Image (cartoon, rainbow, N blue to C red; front, side):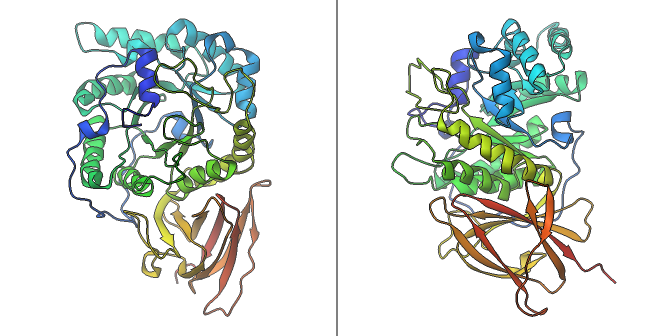
Length: 455
């Protein structure tokens, strides 16, 4: 979060790991006139850097923040995490040093999970005589544990810390190139900051050279409104990732705290499916264990209650992760996000792009309910395209008709249970064929479209 009335991982990290010097976004950026510039369709992909294992393999990263506390770091608790379909555990809660992290890494390995621990020797590393050897020694300690996937280095850093963080992440990459030096960014919440936020992202990518561009944005408020910058934040992060050839990750909210509401099952899925349509290659839950005894905010029920019992959100996340997010995410993880546009909306959300036939490789027209269309292709480009359709609404089902271009030979609907594509019924004539899509509130569906090979 970026205002003093809400608590984020930044605040939790500051209280647990002693993170210092992190300012809220209004202090990071000078507001500029709102801008909607920047491509919605991107064809020139920058060459990617060498990727850590967590980004390079075929498992879609589904992570958590605020793991079980030390007293609850048991085989049972980590099997419970894995059973939910979560595969990445980040540090936090009171898990912020080697003694605690040792047990976390052991339990994570037992459950087949990967871990991004917090260690103050990394987070607070300051260039001075001998600092490189100290960091290398810390990395060596963690390398002994199979679950170790990298470090959660910093959360929502102020740009004044970029030079120091760059030195840390460069040293981590040189010491353990298969591990991730993970940094998460602040979002922006007022529309006049759009232009400044684009400059903020440019500086971040250029000055940090991160392996992944990650951020958080919790759009659903207790007054039942949506933050006006939710979709444009997704757009700016997507553009930053594409221009630099890096995958993007996002945190989604699971728990009422401050002005953020407790999501319903459909609202939890909606956050995830909008992120998929915008090309996100990793989803993390804020939070998993419910924070308690906080001096600033009361947290209601995350996936695991303060008592240690699973809440209804755990069950929703279990179904979402295992039956939808992981199988769909595997399909999309190594594809390129070619388009992220809105269709069938009379008034577009701030900063978003409307669907046009000229910008799509596969669709010539749309009608019906409002949807968000994510179009994907492989790299290098071949004759296959993928289309992810997210319901714009989390309160009503979407019924949309998508008309395909003549060069599309066939359409397949992804079936998550079998990880296969089944033929999709096409209606109309070959010159104007279409298919109908019905999506539940907050849901999303994936399609694969085959193009006629060039002569």
